[in-house]
Length: 431
Image (cartoon, rainbow, N blue to C red; front, top):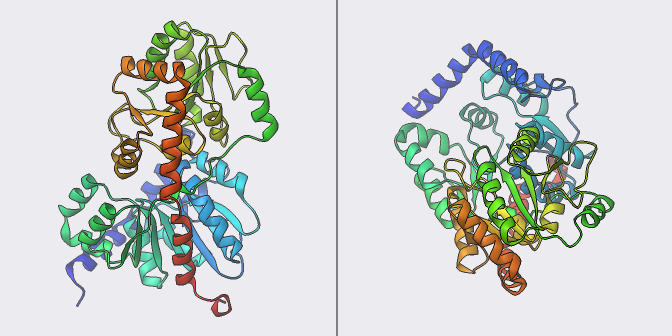
């Protein structure tokens, strides 16, 4: 007789069959909000216009831009080993990034909604030999579908915050049913690993964070060179991956910063490029001369105060140009912070706000090494940026400390790739 957890999952999966009209409605509403690709929206319902490639196929799911960037080195390792890779994501921005990196061995599709009809159509078509979910994406219907078909699922770069673990622990029967269906979890840290084990995952290893190995996407060399010429000798204050509510703080800090360093250029790189127009209007309303990158690939002029970098796949070039870089998602509560590894890899002295719950272990490593500065308010942000701009030696020491942390903690991609290839088995065994 099935246990209670299995019955609960089966009931939930069955109920999602009744939710198909709601799934269509959700996709339709997202299309109206320009959150779905108007040409590919049926992929969210499990349909595909692409054929399944022959040979071994690994399905890698990376929900958004950060996870997609982190997964690219893993994908490169798998394709180099002769494995075909299907990459799925949810956001149109991540799809654009993945599409730019695609090849014969690497295809992108939007992930299906986690409802039984969509998941079944998706799995019937692609028939992956292994599934790799990057970070904390846990979809009960998809997990159950993979489990019933005997397709091994690996959680890569597994992250389980204390808050999320407490929420799962409120429903222990459901948690054990879901987590027992995760054959292998490759956790970012020992703390994450312990929380996955406590929730019922049968095999958990702490292998480190694959984002320490991820390359940061950059603009073509000629574009980066033109950006460098346009900036000249001006110090650059970069606000990277900002969210609503943060741009106001950044602009206030920039106004304070310009009192001490009037020649400074502010580059705002929004997490979602479609916010570029709103940010530009906000900056202009604050009295700054603004240029938007997305409008005819415009470059800043000598009189530009705020440059809105509302494009995809060029963040590395802006980090390289930055004198000081703010890590977005950290100035307002509820987002959890964004990747502090990217500025460290590219030599930018980094400042962060106080909210970084998604990166506790990584932030601890940078803070312990004096490779990162925290600022809680616009005033503190302006002061931290001003100190770093004024003191090249301080800036160099902080950047070097952060680079040492990255070098010390790299290597998770290789360990993850080996685990995936072990689950796939030898090529000759595959149909």
